[in-house]
Image 1 (cartoon, helix red, strand yellow):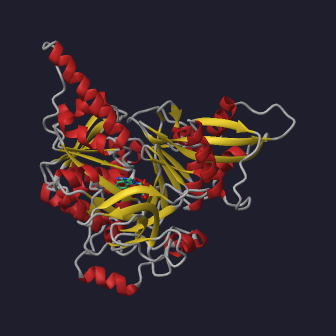
Image 2 (cartoon, rainbow, N blue to C red):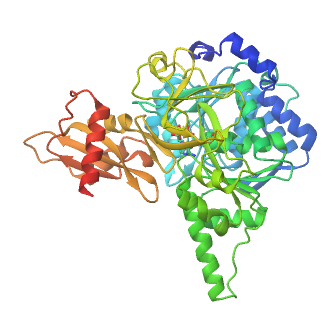
Image 3 (cartoon, rainbow, N blue to C red):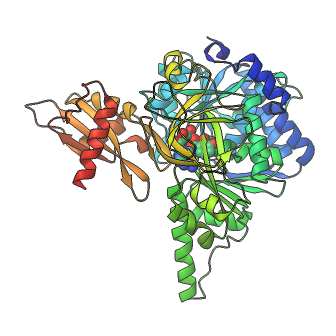
Amino acid sequence: MTAVADGVVPYPPEAAERYRAAGYWTGQTFPALLDAAVADHGARMAVVGTGPSGAERWTYAELDARARGLAAGLAEIGVAPGDRVVVWLPNVPAYVETVFALFRLGALPVFALPAHRESEIRYFAEHAEAVAIVTAGRHDRFDHAAAAQAIAAEVDSVRHVVVADAPGAEPVAGRLSLSSLRRTPPDTLPGDDADPSSVAFLQLSGGTTGLPKLIPRTHDDYLYSVRASAEICELGPETVYLAALPAAHNFTMSSPGLLGVVHAGGTAVLAPSPDADTCFGLIETERVTIAAVVPPLAAAWVQAATRAAERSRADDSRSRRDLSSLEVLQVGGAKCAPELARRITPALGARLQQVFGMAEGLVNYTRLDDPDDVVLHSQGRPISPDDELRVVDPDDPDEREVAPGEVGALLTRGPYTIRGYYRAEEHNASAFTADGFYRTGDLVRLDPGGNVVVSGRVKEQINRGGEKIAAEEVENHLLAHPDVVDAAIVGVPDDFLGERTHAFVVAVPDREPPGSAALRRFVRERGVAAYKVPDVVEVVDAFPATGVGKTSRRALRSALADHLRVET
Ligand code: J2J
C-alpha cells in the first residue's frame, strides 16, 4: 500500500518556514489539541448527542478515554499509523469518538458525508486505499452498514467494516461493532508522536470533474485555521455549538466548528437532523450559543421562528421555543442573499455571520463587530493576514488581476490552503497555478474594506443549497444508461436552494426515449447521493450547436442554461 505522503504536494520549504516563523504553524497535532482540552477543561461537557443507545453526554475526560480505548481496539484489529479509514457516520457522538481515536492512532480519517452512497464511498475507499470503513447501521432509510460490507467485498484494501451500534446489539457476520472495540484506555498511542507537518486526514472536495477529489490537510495548517477561526468567532469554554449540518463537512468541522469548540473547551451538540423542530428544541434545552447553517436551512429556520411568533401572538397560551441563548448564526456554503440576511436577526434574535469557505483551505468571515452593511452584503474577509487573494480576469490566459473592485476569478494561496489534491497530478496542473495559487473557480469582487463579495463561478459545479454537484459526474451516470447518447447538466436559479439541477438528455434515435422518472431512478440506483439526482430530466432531440465545436462542455451547458432562461 502507498504511504499517503506519496500522493501529496507539500508546501514549499520556504513557505513552511515563513508560516512557522509567523506563529501560524505551531507544531500542534490533533492528539495534542485533545490533550490540551482535557488538561484545561477535563470535567467540562464536550459532546452532547443521541447515539444508538440514546442520549449521550461526555466530558472531555470521557471523550478522551473513549477515543483512547477505541484506538487500542482498532490497533488490535490491525489498523496502523498512516492507514486510511473512511468515516461515514451521521451526527452521532461516536463520530467524534472515532475521529479522535483515529488521530490518537495516527491513522487518517477520510471524511464521507452521510448522504453519500455506494458509488462515492467505493471511490473514496479505492482512491485512498482505505483499510476500514466506520459507519452506522440503518440511517436515513438506508442501510449504511450493508452498503459498506458490499464495498468491502469489492475493494481489496478494505479489511473491516465497523458499525457504531448500541452495546450488546446482535452481532452480524462480517461486521465489527464499534462498542466491541472499546478497550481500557492505554496511556500512550502512536499518534501522540505524529509529525505536525504530516497529513492528518483527507477531506472531500465538491468536485468539478467526473470524480470528487480528496484534500490532504496537515495538522499544522488545519489547526492554525481552527484556532484562528475560534478566535474570530469568539469561542470560549461557555460556547455551546450546534452541529446542524453534517459533522464531517469542512464548515461544521473547522469554521470554527467541532474542532474550534474542542480548542476553546466548549460544548458541541450534535443535531440528529437539521430541521427547525429538532434544532430549536436543542437550542432551548442545551442553551446553544452558536450554530452553522447553509442558506436554505437559514430560510427554513427564519420561516419556522416567524410562524411560531405569529401563532403565539394570536394565542398567548401557545408556547414557543426559547431561542434567546443563540448569539450567532453562521451562514455559509452558498451565497446568502441580502433579503435572507436581513431577516435573520429579527426572526432568530442572533447576530448573522457570513462564512465563505472551502475544504481546500481559504475561509472568510464577516467579523462579529462589523457594521450591518458588511454583514448583510459581503461574505467576509480571510482568516489570516497571510492569505493571498488575487482576483484575475478569467478570460485572460495570463491571469492578470482586474482593476480594484471589479469582478474576477479568485485565486488564493496561504498558510492553510492546499498546494494540490491527493493523487491527482493531472487535475492539479489545471486547479493550481505554477506558483501554487489554488484556482477556486469562484467569481468575486473585493469591497474597499477587503471583504469578498461572491458573484458567481467559473467552475463546472452546481451549488444546490450548499451541496456541491460536479456536472460531469452526474452526466457520466446518465451516459451509462443504454438509451442515452448524450447528457448535460445545468444549474437553474431556484428561490429556495439558490440553484437546482436540470439535465438535458439526448436519447438513442428511433426508439421510445426513456422517461424522466425512469432516468432519475436510474441515477439514484447507481448509488449516488440523493442531492445529485437531477431535479428535472428533459429529453431533447439534439443539443443546440454552440459554434465552438462539440467538445466544449462549458459552451454547451451555458447554451442550454440560456435556452431555459428564455423559456421561463
Ligand atoms: C457563496 N459561495 C460559497 C458563501 C462556500 C466554511 C463555509 C463553507 C465551506 C464550504 C467550508 C460560500 N457564498 N458564503 O468549507 O470551511 C461555495 C464556493 C466555494 C465552495 C466550497 C467552510 N461558501 N461557497 O462550502 O468545500 O463556491 O466548503 O468555492 O463544500 O462553496 O465548498 P466546500
